[in-house]
Length: 478
Image (cartoon, rainbow, N blue to C red):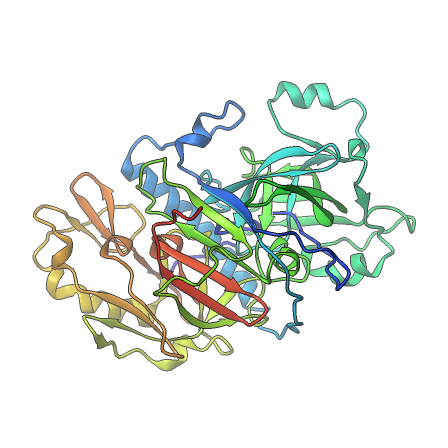
């Protein structure tokens, strides 16, 4: 069935990330920090968020409710992806990034607000203030709940138990003038407003999401404090952030968004210039014990590549802010499916993006129909269930064993091959109920590799060399 898609400017990821704009000025004279920066990624259903008295997130009431929440969020995100990609398949000049070191950030998953699955914690301002942000590989704007030149609102906001960034109280916050080329040209696709009453007035934005959510504020630069893997804390100056003073819609329970999408001003691109030209994330099974941690790393994760690391082309600049990959086909039990090649053409009407903010994997109808057909023989052993959960094919799990399911593989044009574990494409919906982790989306359009399919793998985004590396991983790096 065809699904509407809704883009979320933050999402995630991932991670994945995918938000504030991390604008790092790197030059040959800029000292490079040693090590990497690591963020913990917190999944939206993590008990860790539920235990936070300032958050209203946490575990859903049941596994069925969990799946419904994830799919609800996916539908909003997919609608946005569809709307954004239709008019934006245009070239984006990819300039060489200068080499440097690494930064790691732990990631956890977020709440059901239609905007992403993973949160990160970061500190911004002078003195630094902590915020819990959605990490989104599908968004370029980084913003947080904020007040600019607000003298009498601290008490009211404190009563609501909200974390608010008071920009005028940060010694290092510098608004971007509305008369500047950055505002009028560079930020035009980040919904900067044309109004400019006076040259020094702050550059304003009116950021709108497909579900009707609206975020209004001003752009500025500030200092972000991060901790390197060796424990050293460093300050990163001139990070672009959005100070969102008006928020209407579904962002009640989050502090903001960290933009990890591919865009000149995104956190990912700017941080990459300072910390090794790459970022990585690793997502554990979404049903794993809470002591297992997802993470987002800026810089190299390990001193040497994982032994089973594969690399494929990372297509940048065609479907910004998304990360596209060059898929050539899908096989089931080593047999390539008869799928029209044009569905993989990212420069045409198709293509595939990898997205940390979508949970399920969404396949355009010509692909979905053939994948489901390839699963029909083994699925005949199980009773099909008509459930309103979101995944398009659910069945009774009585007598189910993973060995009964065929092996799925996603093939890339340059020879790399993703072979996910069965639990990444046959998921537990509730006690005694299994669902295929695929859903159908309309054609023409883009297919989306979601975060459940990405689980138990390390994903490395090399922005300098336009490469995506991936390998099976337990996500237990130091």
